Image 1 (cartoon, helix red, strand yellow):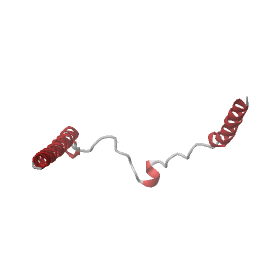
Image 2: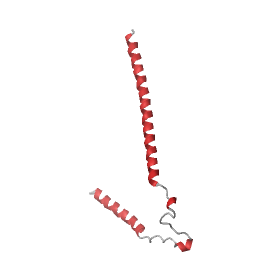
Image 3: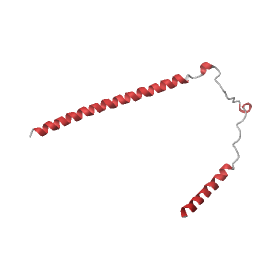
Image 4: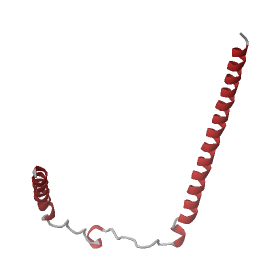
Length: 100
């Protein structure tokens, strides 16, 4: 019963805090283009000025794949080195235990 009461009080407090935020007037509109001299552009003026997005995206993905495969190759080569060292150590331990 105590939990329900505290839940109701929490909801009422949150609603009371949110009410002033929703009652604020909307932000003023941006000044017109004639007032500040800025005119937004909807499309590129010259099609040659546009960036070739598909080609840039393909280059970026290609670069990421090359880096990923390079990283995996270095990890595999380091792991192979560690495995060779461990095999060498285990063979040395086996030979030293046979000597006594």
